[in-house]
Length: 164
Image (cartoon, rainbow, N blue to C red; front, side, top):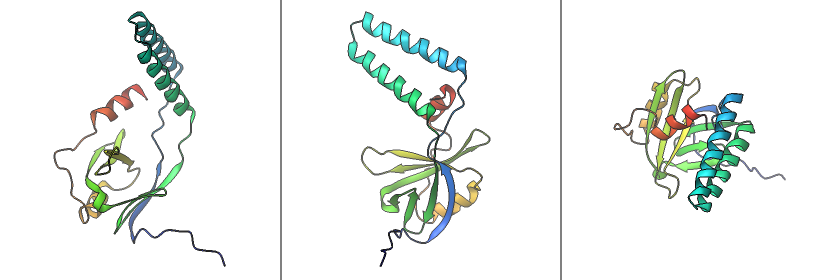
């Protein structure tokens, strides 16, 4: 008899598909300028004798270029009565410190979760076509909203502007 391998994470209260990560449209001009900037930083690091910095810059550039070629998968996201589920990853509500929603269409439609888990301070879920008011109502039943935050974090703004 085949075992049921599906794990139970609670009753689904809200669910939608989201991209694994945000994919930016990069033009030839973007690649040109990123190569110039990378070469400039590597050259400067050699000129100042900081070889480690040049290795870090080269590794970061390679990762950014490789990620730019990767197509994001559609991943199911669910809010359950026990926690939140992103693909196969389950985070119980006890490990979530709070959430906030940044909704400024068409560019920004995200829900952010602050986690208590070490080395995982925050993760972002794209709302897509979901109603942010409904998402907020469901989440407020289980975790607190961070009312000090209401917009996109600076790091996300920089990544969106520079398409990284």
